Amino acid sequence: MKTSLKILSAACMLPLLAQAEVEQVQVQLDPFTVRNIGGVTQFDRAQYITIHESFGSTDMSDDDLRYIEDVLEAEFGRDGGTISWLAEAVQADPNNPDMPDVEQIKTIFDKKFGFANTPQRMNPTNMEQVILCTHPEIMHGHADNTSTPWGPRSAEATAEFTAQLLKHGFTDASRPKILEVYNEPFVKAKKIPTTIPEMCEQHNVVAKRVKELNPDVIVGGYSAAWVEFESGDFHNWTNWQKQFMDIAGENMDFWSYHIYDGVNVVGTPASRTGSNSEAIMDIVDSYSHIKFGVAKPIMITEYGKIPQNSMNSMPYSKERSAAMLYSAMGQLMTYMDHPDRLMRTIPFFLGKATWTYGMTNEHIPGNANPYLLWRKLADETFVETDLMKFYYFWKGVEGEWRQSHSSNPDVRVHLLADGKRLNVILMNLDEAAKQVNLTGLTELDAQAVRIRSLTTNGKRPILGERPANAIPTWLDMEAGDVVMLMIELEEMLAADSEIREHRVYATDYLHEIEANQATTFTFENVPTGDGTAILRFSPGRGEGKQVLPDSVRFNGTNLAIPTNWAGDSQEGRPNFFGMLEFQVPMSALQETSVVEIVYPDSGGKAACAVLQVNRIEK
Image: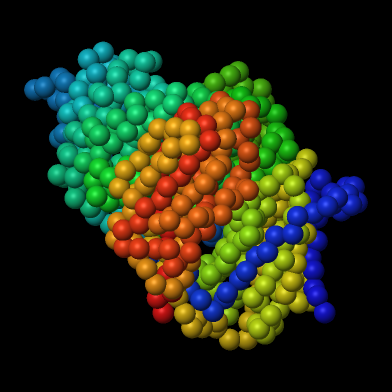
């Protein structure tokens, strides 16, 4: 007998699916095969279940921190202000007014962030993966900077302060091991004023000095705010991200940027969830591999959705919070496919963030910033917001990746084996409902099944959990629904095989598209054998241009042209930039492989191509 589950959304006040024709999506699950993603097999909560707060968040009590760690089971992610604020407490060197007083740094910050002072807040295990960054308005070195008694009036001054603070303000155990030189610097360059090349060069100076004094710290950037790489026929890419990588890339241990639906500071309103965020990652990886011989790791140090009026205090809206949860959950479900590439991903969810009240507009009691987990009421007390549901949904989730596949890129799926528990996590990114058919679980002897669900496409987000009599064989999923099947087994689920995902980057990138002319990419040292393969191709195309190519030939073999990609159509944007997936027969792979892509119209760029080989290795 078939068992089914209907996930009821807030939007489902009308009869379910309104008798409309619903697309059937096939999800294949293989709980007996390990999914090895570039050498990573375990889901790491510290990598994904994070919060944009840290030990430096002085507006939260130790009890608040315990709640984040013990109840939400979240990891501290990023600290955007501590270095900048502490710089203002340091005087100039009496012998060199353009440099900080290093002796004073040693004195006033001596083990300031040590475990003995505040054990809960300064627990080394809570601190070492926190990403530190600075405000460029305060910490960019330039001649007219008066933010502190010593400027900083040069990159060397900023570098010295940062390096000395990291060395003397922490113990070796408690020192945060990750530094972004700035937060979103390039969009602030004119206001400071400075230039992008000067900001790139400060990354070099800071990285070198920090590593001299703190060899256990990795340094990266540039914490890009505006990743609309395709803008101006990839002018944005060439003059921002590529220029940064060309000037500072040799000294960077990782790249970082921010992904938002909506508008982040400047640019075109856009939904980046899905194919666009994948294309952004792939072009950064591709150029990194071409220039440095390695795709350096990436950190997405802010992500989510920017609502209208962004950082202003505003009346609370459950519907707005639901939309923010859709973006955060949808982006996370795609990031989870890349634990080998994405070192950390941080949703821009803040704790209490009392510094936001009145920051950008006149504060009205009872209004609050939309990114908060706790908002302040008119009577000055705090209450939880619906954004907490992000963490409640992921509470208790651990495990080893096992194989899963969806026939529709808008239905994302992950399968995690955690001891005697199997977690099946799905999300519908599409604007239309889907019937999701599940195969591969019939051999399991389920002792108990619970179903956790979160709706994000309605007047309010709804989080629920209930038991089921058996493992469902199909689900009705409305737009924005997120579902987790938690299947309890009698015994641990041992794997009998393993598939490893290999990434092969093309030897070049960013080709002009010319009508009826083949654009070629070459891949070298391609793994062959048994398994499956996917060509990840990311075109940038102007309005009115055809997104999908007419033909794709891989070593002479014609590939099927897909009709869909993850996320929305990008309709209404000046340009399309997204990653398209093409299935490649393993029999077509050669050690050196060539793909030829033909469009019927000229314009735009064939930005990058990545070959993913999923090879059976055990």
